[in-house]
Length: 109
Picture 1 (spheres, rainbow, N blue to C red):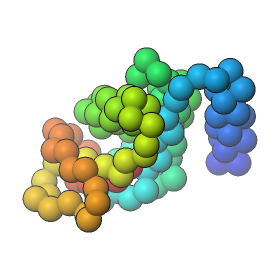
Picture 2: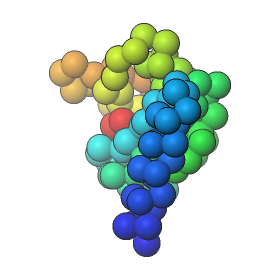
Picture 3: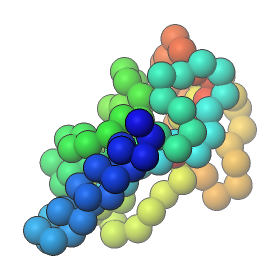
């Protein structure tokens, strides 16, 4: 199943690139606590902030990731962000945002 998702994901990325559409790719790199998204989960966010393919979590996390993806598209550079419900510190070089969530304690994108 993961291989199929991977092939479909990269096919979609190639399609966006061929069509010269602006987009961002969000990838979960670390999760603390429980979350519907797992490390390695990916999503393609289009230039309108819509998740065109994939999954990086729901609720507050999804909305925040979409907004941050739009900023990355506008600035033309990647960002490492930490979404956290409880921590007071952030990994070096990361952007930290507090969100309200009932599932995970911390997500890194």
